Length: 307
Length: 317
Image (tube, rainbow over all chains, first blue to last red; front, side, top):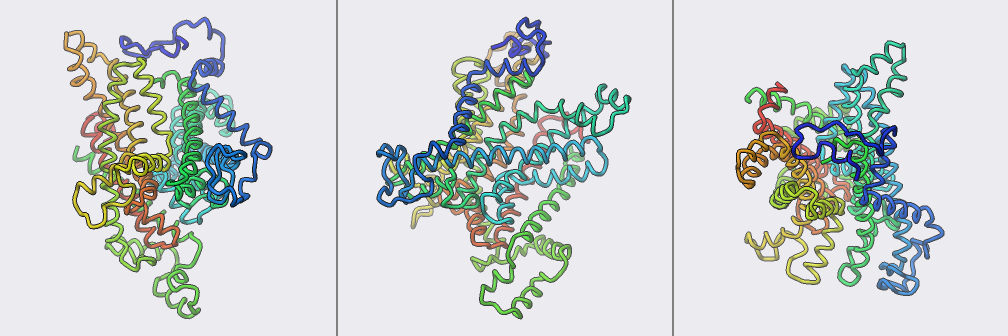
């Protein structure tokens, strides 16, 4: 662990101490320093490697999956894990659980990352505009944000799906919309403080346009909290989307999606508990890995946020 | 304080109006014609048109919203299509069941989360602290619908010591039986909240332990237990109140999943069934009730926060 990580962390120092001279980090950019700190965080690295593995398996699903994920084979109905050809067993229609798991990883990762991307892009644009221009527009946007945040996250997602109708695409859209207000708040907050900083004034004095100031001076300086929030959100969104499928409001059978697998497997917990245990474990491990990486990134990007 | 309370209560009005507007619009956007849903596929054009007129569906949206809102305020939340009964008494009744579950989960989460966080903070970087914090990350990474199923398998099916579904056993009405049914769902629901409360308590405690007044307390020879309990924890509790309040949102959402897993007759289960059956008056009522109670809880948390920390109310008023 680098000395910087513990700066100001001793009980005796009342204020966070300035970073002591650090020969290792001397002359390195903040991003390089952050990368070094992250590389030293063992849990975050384990999470990152695991995620890389899951992503690779998902990408190579057509090559790796031993069976078609939705092909039924009633002769193999509910066979237990370890059956030759069916490493993780088969479900009530004789579909190979391993193949469904591998294909399901694609959907879950896709939902998680694309929903965060949509929420972040929309939230960042709205937050930049609200924070930078202020005034009535800002007031209106923030009231809307307040209303959206007056709903518990999962309830809002359910409300949106109830309106658009159940389905994979609508549940993806729903979790993205749920994420937007959080990004608006993060970005607006940092814009409010950044636009009064000297470098923003200086840029304005040199005649830079609003767009240039936002894109070149303000946005790059609000990146750290965005990166941290988005990493943690990927996990949350994956869990929320799986939850919606579990409720019957997201992806629909026979899609090989982890929430759907769990919801269908639940009917067989007496004689085939592996149908529920396996897909849930997959969601758990992926979300855990994302949270470990998110925590690591938070510590690496902003040592002051260290608990 | 009175002024602050008045201010906060007033600021609630636009939010609540926004919530009702959103709930109203969302249900308007929903595909399908309510008249068709009520009368079924065999209805004639004339009877459909007549029902649309009776329901006010031929009016412009803002008038429909105004009428709907005035009915909602007067306690007329419409009739459930599926259950053929008034929505408001039904959702209130179901909400009571959900409230039992959430209250118990919240108690569990606070009773475990706060002590674990304090314990971890005063032993920062010890093995126990590290293990505790890894467990915490696991706690909020675990999908609660899966955790519920695992608990059902272990305690219900393998060990056979706890009921895995429902609110009461047939023919039973007593509190002990109710509690027995609540244990597994409440444990499931409490897990994520416990983890987050423990984590926040720890970081809040770490913040406070570094303060001058804690050093002073130690320097004057006060024993460690008193320093922690009387000086540190009391101040650390202020942000913890907010975190506990935030968990209510998590519980209200998670509750829906937990109710489905345990077939627990609460509002969440009714809501999901309503959505699948396209029973929009019921869904609308359920969402409205949950969202407005969340808004109220947030208000109470803010007020508690201002009461505990006078700086807040001076800054904001």
